[in-house]
Image (tube, rainbow, N blue to C red):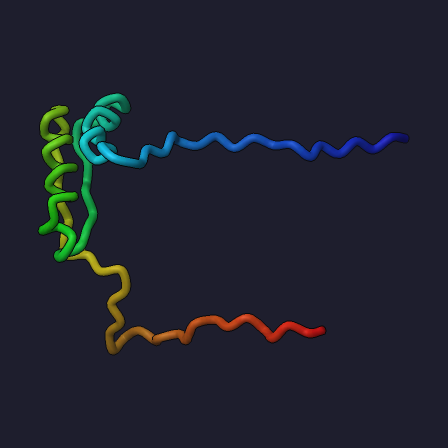
Length: 94
């Protein structure tokens, strides 16, 4: 009996767009997916920058309704949460 092991595999993902001018293209990409309404998540500080305005203008120009949620926080500890210390790697053994 011969055992054959495949070592190749494929992963399909959405295209990633980055670089100069990428934010101006957001509306075109959203429209290509036939989106009519999107949620734009940011935080209060970033929401006041030109980056978010550029994305909103691009979506508006493409006819995509945009709802901005800017009161988000990446991590907001409270009295009800426990702060977990960062995980440390075990020391290397020689």
